[in-house]
Amino acid sequence: MGPTNVALVKLFRADQDLREAQAKLDAATKNVRIQDRRVKDLTEKLKAQQQSLREVQTKSSQFELDIKSRDERIEKLRTQQQNAKNNKEYQAFLIEINTEKVDKSKSEDEMLKAMQEVETRSADVKDLTAQVESDSAKLATMQAEITETIKQLQAEVDSLKPARDEAAAALPQKARDAFERIVDKMEGEALAPISKPDKRREEYICGGCHMELVVDVYNKLHSRDEIVFCPSCRRILYIPDDLPPEVAVKKKKAEKPVNRDLGERAIGKGRAKDIGAAAPRQQSAAAVLESVKQEEEPPTTSPSDEVPQAPSQTEPEAAKAEADSEKTESQG
Image (tube, one colour):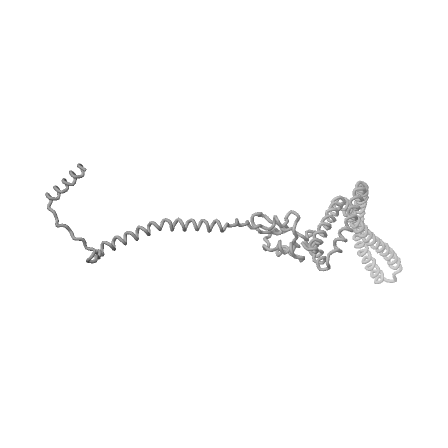
């Protein structure tokens, strides 16, 4: 792979190491964070209940003050009623006194409701206060127990951050921006290795989404310095260490060399054999033709070549001559 892809893989691995260490730290502090969140929620709820209690207490105090003022008003009206000059004024003061009594009764009812609500909210505040104190003590105990573990894990996280920053700084701006955009979206899985499921066939898949890739993806990553994205999941592809060219690329079997001299010799022998087999056939055919020709054409002789033939003998004469010849040969 080219230097850009090599740097991307280095950044990816540094980011993975940092995320793994951060995950360990988060897991170790998970219970503490849950308890801390519980204490904070209870504290907020306690504050809300305390505020509501103060409001109800204020409302109850207002009703109490209103009742007190109405009592004073009624006493004043009674004094004025006793000094009334006539029955009309007396009845007017009486009506006003009765009106104040009705309003006072309403205020007393409202104050009673307020006082009951104050008692309820006071009990809730008391319970929440006790719960907050208990959970705060539990949180302090948990923090004390894992303090050393958190320190070690936090130190590991802090030690890995410079390597990650250094790897990011070694990348071109465009490649770094692409990585940071994908790593946040994919929760750390910004890169995906290409895989060859069948070693007998030159086919590749994305190691992230397992979708099929084009055949020349290995050649692009191996011979060019460019970022190649998976068309399906949009992760950045890279060549893993366990997929070198001798494993990834299928080699063609070498053809056996053909010995042309042996072939020509074999062909020559075959031709010679055919010619040798055909020669007798040609000679016999020529002889047949010649014999047929001689039978069809009578022989031509010149007058000088003619030989006088002896007169033909009868069969008895011929037999006698033959016997004489044999007798002569036996005597000789």
